[in-house]
Amino acid sequence: MKTKTLFCCYAIILSISVQLSLAQNRTIELWKNRLQTETREIPKTDILLNLSKEYELENNLNESLIYANQALSLGEKANYKKGMAFAYLQLSLVNGKLGNKSTARKQRNKANDLLEEINQHIGNDIVQLQKQQLLAAEELKKDQEELALQKEEAEKKRLELEQKNAEVEQSKGEIALSLQTINELSGDISEKESMLLKKQRQLDKQADKIKILRQEKAIQDLALEKQKVVQKLMIAIVAGILLLVLFLLILYFNKKRSNQKLEEKNEIIEVEKQRSDELLLNILPSELVDELKEKGTATTQYYELATVMFTDFKGFTQISEQLSPQELIEEIDYCFRGFDLILEKYPSIEKIKTIGDAYLCAGGIPIPNAQHPVEVVQAAWEILAFMKKRELQRKDQGKPYFEVRIGVHSGPLVAGVVGVKKFAYDIWGDTVNTASRMESKSEVGKINISGNTYQLIQNHFACHYRGKIQAKNKGEIDMYFIEKPLSNNAE
Image (cartoon, rainbow, N blue to C red; front, side, top):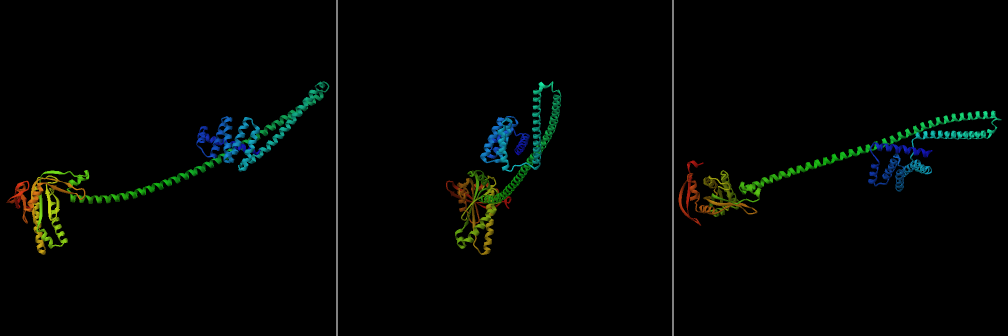
């Protein structure tokens, strides 16, 4: 009886599982797909059992039997006793439908032994109803045996009556009495059959109650299991969200820190860039700096007309012997700084370089300008005034002073950047050489200009003709001293 109860429980649980699976569109094809992808033995056993049950519900008993046997073999291999028990129960159910009663009974017994071993029991209410059902079944069995005996006795009576049929004429009274007895017995049998039918209905009601209780218990178990799965899933989702938030925060702060470092580096780079630009502008004209940045090289330019100015200190060697090295450098620096400040007032003039005590600049480069001859001579005139003022200061201090002489010439030249390291903007051509010759033939506190320059500035400055000088490859060149700016050019 216990085996039947366990079998019924298993059938109900499997039935509910199948209904839930159908509600979730889990068909035989789904179970087969899962069987192909699953590698663990215990889950594969459960999948095989589900496939067996699906085929049983479709009344494909042979296919159901194959999957149940596979589940039993895999459960034995994995020592999965619960799966083995359910496999035996499924086999007994299918064999029972196939008419293999003896095999089904043996398999139910094996399933019962395994279920008892793993403590798979049904609730107290179900057990109590099963006991009541058992008692009712035993009582029904007794009534059926009693009815069978009465039927057998009635049959014997009928046979006796047939044997005594020949004596009917003589024993009518006895026959009537026997018929009455038979009728009474038939009435008793009908009454007992009615009672048996009533008891059978009661047993069916009790079986229905047991079935309902089993279904409710299975549904509750499934609901609890589903709730646990949902809780675990929620915990996993929350943990995943927290980890994602933490990861994003770490990324955010790392990005912020990287951006701060990048901004600091960019600021440093910008400061260094400004410094390098300032250094380049101190060495090269701004136009060439832009060209170097864009192309990496500067184009050499030829100028049809430019004005070159040379300055030189008279008696530089003798004065330098009277000063310490520091004092000498400081005095030269003071004078050349003054020259630089004067040239800044004239955009057409570009400082080229200093060579010892000589100072070289040119007008009309790198951007051509028609006013450059006048502006160069005007700058030379201001340099003379600056050096005269410095002379008076040094005399008051009782210190030696420099006396300057200046030479200017106008003509064509070539300008460009030379060198790879410590490159410099420089000028070449006869115009440069002639300007140097003008300076060397000048006098202290005087500006000596060539005839070319005179032709360009004569309307702006009063000049004194000095005569001619022999120039290499050029013959004789006229020279003029600048006397003073004319009124329309005076500061």
